[in-house]
Amino acid sequence: MSTSNSERFSLSVFTASVLTLFASAAAAQNWDIGISSNDMSAEELDLERPGFPGGNIRSGQEGWVRMSFVIAPDGSATDPLIIDSSGGAGFEDEARKVTGKWQFDPLSSTAERPNNLVNIRSEIFRGRDMATSNFIRRYRRIVTQLHNEENEDARRLVDSAYELGGWNLYESTMLWLMLGRVEGVEGNLGGKLEFYRRAHGIAEKIQLKRKDRVDLLEKIFAMEDHFGQYAAAMRTYAELQQALGKTPVNDLIEARAAELRAKIASDEALTAQATIYNPCDCDEGQPLWYYKPARRTFSFANLSGNVNSFEARCDSQRVTGSVEPGKEWTLAPEWGSCRVFVFGDDGATFDFVEHPSELQDDAPTTMAEYDVLDRRNRGQRS
Image (cartoon, rainbow, N blue to C red; front, side, top):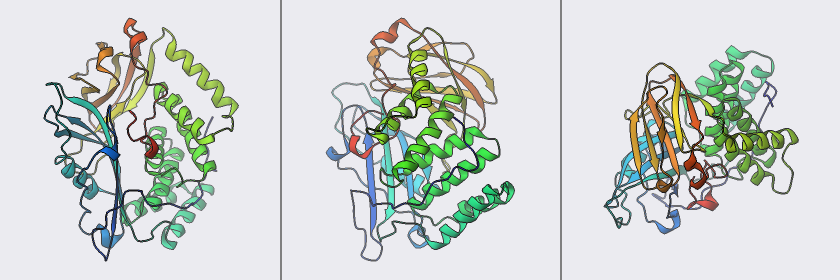
C-alpha cells in the first residue's frame, strides 16, 4: 500500500454545519461545536460560541480547531491543549478564549474529568460552499506541477497559497491535501500523515466524495501502519469500513488489519514512531504528539532531540511525568479510556512503546473507537 505522485482528490460540494448563529445581517457566521466526552453530548450543552477573529470575515478565512481540555471539580473547563487546527492564530486564540468561559455541571466528587475533546468549526455562512476560481487555478497548477515532477515549483506555489489565506473550510481541506502530497514527494512521510489527518478532520462526511474519502482513509491507514501506530490504524480501519458501507474493504488492507489485530492482542511490544510538532500558530501553542494507545503500560525509547515530559488524560484521572528512556508507566483500568500527550521541541522524535500487561484484559479497548469526532456521535468517546 504505497502512494504516488498520481494520487488526486476531486473538488466536491461542502455543506454548512448544523448549528448556526447569525451574528449580523451583513456577514452571518456559523459555528459548530462538537464535544467528545465520557458522559455528555454537544446537544445537551449550552456553550458560548467563539468570536470570529477580526479581519477574517473580510478576507473570507474560515477556521477549525481541535482541543483537549479538562473539566475541573467545579465544572469549569481548564488546561486547553490545541492538538490540531486550520485557519491561523486568530481562530486558535478565540477557541482558547471561549473555552476558558465554559461551565459544565459541577462534579459529585473532588476528582476532575481530564479526557475531553472539542472540535470548533468557524464558518462564514453566505453560500461559500465550493472553491473559488482563484483557488481552483492554484490547485490545478499544483496538480500539474506534481504530475510533471516540478516539485520545487509545487512547493513554492502551495506555500504561497497557505500564506495568502482567505480560504473557506472546503478550500482549506484541499490545501492540506496538496501540502500532504508535496511533503510526500519530498520524502517527509510524517508531514504527509499530519496534513492528511488534518484534511480528514476538517472534512464533513459529505464534503469529500465517497471514493475520495475511502482513498484518503486507505492512505492514512497505510502511513499509520508504516509508523507502527497500530491503535490509530485500527481506528482508521473502522472508519474505512463505515465509509464503505456494504462494500468490502480492499483485500490487502483487510489482511493487514487482521495482522494488526493479532499484534495488538499478542505478547509482543508495540513500537510507534513519533515526531513532535506544533499544531498551533498561536503564542500559547505547545509542540506535542498525542496518541490513544491500545494498551495500559507504555515506555519511551530512541529519543532524538528534546522530548521532556508527558501527560496522560484519562476519563477520571490524569498523570504527568518526565520522559525517561526505558521507564514504564501504567494507566489503571479504573481510570477509563486515556490519551497520552508528549511534549518537547518541534521536530524531536522518539519511539512510544506499548507493553503487554496483566491489567490489559480488564481495560476498555480503544481499538475500534474513532479518533475523529463524528457529528452523528458527538457523545462518543474518541
